[in-house]
Structures are given as C-alpha cells and as structure tokens.
Amino acid sequence: MNAKITQYFFTKDSVKANFLYLVSFIFILFGLLVDPLNQVWDGFLAILTSPSNLITDYFEVGGIGATFVNAGLLMLINAMAIKRFSTKITGPLVAALFTVMGFAFFGKNLYNSIPITIGTLLYSQYRNMPIGNFLLTSLFATTLAPVVSIITFGQGLSYWVSVPLGVLVGVIIGFTIHPMGSSFLRFHQGYNLYNMGFTAGVLGMIIASIMRVFDLTTTYDPIIQTHSIIEVEAFFVAFSLFLLIIGFMLNGKSFKGYGIFKKDSGRLISDFLTDYGVGLTFINMGVLGLTSLAYVWVVGGTLEGAVIGGVLTVIGFGTFGKHIFNVTPVVIGIFAMQVMMAVDEPSSTASLLSALFGTTLAPIAGHYGWKAGILVGLLHAGLVPNTGITHAGLNLYNNGFAGGFVAATVVPVLDGIRERNEMREGISKG
Image (cartoon, rainbow, N blue to C red):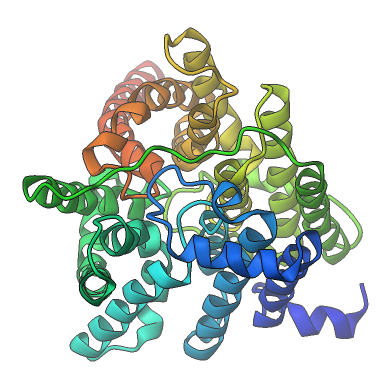
C-alpha cells in the first residue's frame, strides 16, 4: 500500500480520524444511492421520531437509505468529537464507534444520543477533568438512547413537554452512568466485554420500574424487517473484504502472525491495535465480519437492521477483545442451546442477536479454554431471552446485561476448578 495513503489513514498502532471519516462517507453515500433523496429525508425524520426500543429495525421504520445515512452521520459526528478531544484513536474507541454505528441500524439516532453525550460533557466539567477521559464510556452509554425517544415520542405528550423531559432524562443518564461503569466492571472481572451493557441494564431496570409505577408506556411491539436485501448483503461482504484487504496490505501482503491472537484472552481492558498493530487487527476485523455474515446465512437468518448491528459490533470488537479463536466456542454453545430450546429457532432475529452479541463472553473462552466457552454460550442463550423484560428494552445492549450475570456466576467456579487442578498438579510433581 502506498506509504502516503497509509500515513493519511493510519499510524503503526492506531487509526487516524481520516479513516473513520472515510467509513462514514461510504455509509452515507451508499444510503444516498439506494433510495431517492426525498425518501431518505422522510425516512430519516421517521427514524428520529421513533420510540426506538428493542427491537426497532430502522430499515422497516425509515428505509434502507435513511438508515445508512443515520449510521454514517452518527459515526461521523462521534469521530469528529474523538478527533477533537482524544490524542490517539485506540482499539477500544474504534470498537465503541463501530458499536454506535451498528446500533444506528436499530435504536440509536442523533436525537436520542446527543443528550447522553451532553450529560458526559457536564460530568467532565463537574469532575474538572478532560472530556477525553470519558469519551469511551460516553459512546457506549448511548445504549440507553431509547429512554430519550420513548419519553419524547411514546407517551402521547405534547412536544412542549416531552422533548425537554426526554432530553433532561438523557442528560441525567449521561451524567450518572460513568461512576457506575467503573464499579460494575469488578462484578464480572472484565470477562464481559460489553461492560456498559451490564451497567445500563441495571440503570435501565430502575428507569423502567419508575416509569411503570407511574403507568407510563415502556414498550412497543418489535418492528423487524423479515426479508434480506441483496444490495445490503453485498455491501457488508464488500465492507468486510475491504477491512481484510487493508489489513493484508499493511501486514506486508501477508496473513503471517494472525495466530498470535490465540494467546490473547481478550479480557478487559485490551487494545489489539496497540498490542499487534493495524495490519493484524484489520485482518481480524475482516475475518470476524465475514464469519459473522456466514453464520447468519448458514443458519438461514435474515440480514436485517438489528442483525447488521450485531455484525458491525463484532467487527468493531475485533480491535478490543474478540478474535476467531475466542468467539467460536461461545457461538457453538449458543447455537447448541438454541437447537434444544423450545422457543425461537437459531435463524430468528432474537437468536441471531444472541449468537452475535453473546460473543461478549469471548474472554472466558480465551482464558479458560474452549470447553468453558461452550459452557457460557449454553448458559447465555438460556438467560438472555429473559433479561430484556427487566429493562423493557430500554437498554440496547441486553446481551451485555445478561453476559454480566453469566460471567459473574461462572468465573468464580472456573477459578476454583483451576486452582484445585493446579494444586493437584503441584502435589503430583512434588
């Protein structure tokens, strides 16, 4: 790859904002090409005014073009903020940006995300600390963006009342969630990659409970697209190949060294860009993207908005904890449980989300081995269908919420088994 082009987009161990801008423009351009401009505009407004709780497929709400524009704009605005306030774009930040972009297909938009970011800004001023210290948490904290939308557009209130109220609640969420995230990380010891999903699940449960006692609407029927669109499928295959080829070129036109990820458990807090460089990390992102798409098609699933969100999140976490070696056992366990379960086929949207987002538990497979990975996959698939009701779908990272409980339950047991085995080995050697 041309050295000047490389330097424009990357450093040796980080991504430059220019690359994130490029990705944003690719998504926006695709959105503007697939639908007429007036249809994109009308669809974008429909997305902004949707209640947006789980599962709200923006393809069905606003159309393909508007959804891609929404995703590209969210990526662009957040990338500009990171450029302004962060000295280095690390793996965790890339993962957060791809997660935001992924959930812009089913739950996040400019209106419901910005108040949470404003809350973060106020919190940084309150703590008298640089906002750059809180950017990562702020990006992931938009998991509670549906709270803003459902208060604003889901209660039948006048906009003179609902808009200020929704924005105020969003600002409060952004202000309060940061100290909570640090505290809850200790609960699962860093083995649940979607730590903010667990934190937001607890906060979302409190918010939903308060809304229920005041007889406020907390849920709407899921809005899901039920058919695949060939142009969208082709786009994400091409996008995954794009990342893979970039990695291949930056890694000396070779896949050499990819096996090094086997030695990395992926436990929080990791940064593959810093540890292994841009080349290998982008290869990892491309591999995860292609295998995620392959899984959806092999089980007979549909690549609709929510599933795309899962694929993009897996790709993003290819910089921050996930690789093919630690996600595979977890997915096997999830699939095995789904085959046995009396509810939902493996091809259903809910099951696909469980399989894709269930890879939040990949560090357990990376640290304790493939058997442990299959075990937590089995448990996660059984638990996650029952956790969404606690927060009424107000927490978009429901799998992170469920994953926190699974990790907190299983890790102490696995540690106990490992310690016992090590003691027995020590005795036998002695």
